Length: 108
Image (cartoon, rainbow, N blue to C red; front, side, top):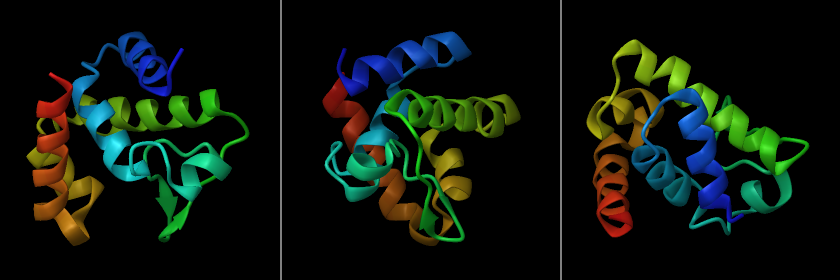
């Protein structure tokens, strides 16, 4: 399975639509080419104090990313790109939101 297919399956497990998570993952990893993705299995740009998190496996990285979105965003009522962006990327919210929405359209 591709990374995108694996993210889609995990989204289904958590009961969330995969379109926003997939667009976020593509943005945050530079279409799955970033160092954090390649070396740390970080599919969502997850970080602690601006330091990218690292995961032991791709599946662990996907689990952390989708679980974070499902529990800390969608379950809290943040279910649009604009609402998610305010919390997910407050420093660069406007550009982040615009880019995620563009990537969503490309995935349609």
